Structure formats: C-alpha cells, structure tokens
Image 1 (cartoon, rainbow, N blue to C red):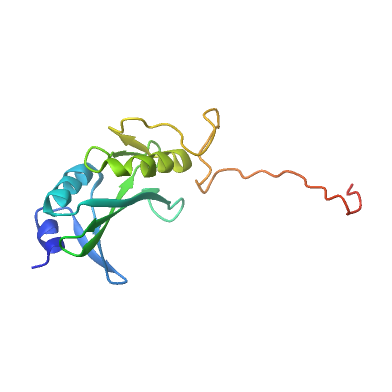
Image 2: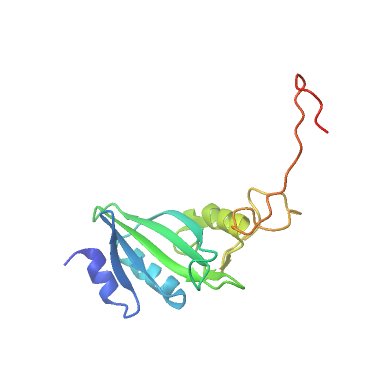
Length: 156
C-alpha cells in the first residue's frame, strides 16, 4: 500500500482522488489540521504552496483551500483540498506544521479574504494595509481608470 493510501485510510471523511496522475485528498474543514499533521508525520516534509480557488457560483461552499505537499523520502506529492464557508471563510493555519507556509497563507488571506486560524501574523502582504476588499475574489469590482496617450486625439 502506498504512503498516501495509508494516510487517507486513517480518516473516514477524507476521500482520495487522482488528478492527472497526482494524488488529491479532499479533507473536511474540521479535519484539515489533523490530516496535515498526520501527513507531516507520514513523511511529507515540505508544504510547497497554499492557495485558494473561488468557486463563486458553482458550488455551495464558495472557497477551496489547496495545499501542495511534497515527500522527498517517499518520492510522493499530495494535494490537500478543503472548503471554506461562503460568509466567513476560516481554515486552520498550516504554519505551526510547516513554517514555510507563512507567506503563502498571508497572500491567500490578502487576495481572497480566507482567514487562517492560528497563523502567527495574518496581515496583508501584497496590498496596502488600508486597502478595502480582496482583489482575487470573483465579485471584486475591478473599476476603471481612463488612459490618455500623448499622440492620440482627445476623447470626449
């Protein structure tokens, strides 16, 4: 039995899928940190990335939080996916397990507004501190700024 299959077998609510040859574990929000802790104990030494997918209208749970893990000793990759509620998106932070997830979680918070509970310094990382909203949400108003080029005729 592969390491990923052993790991998933420990959790009733976790389902294992294949996506283009990569193992994907769909984890309940409540089990997120517990499953991640077991993954680290099983040999997944590195959290490569944490990001968010905004499924604005296509799913009841609007946000999917995705973490990509790497085990060099087992030569395996694992993508963990959980959902976050539409109104107050909160997911447990992976920083206590993998300190390298710090900036990725801050970026996800800044761009999508997902709160990572237990994060040591969940502050904006890309946008100014006084910025309102989260620019990568699908319902974020883009706005417009008129542009006038030097050589072009005046637009009325």
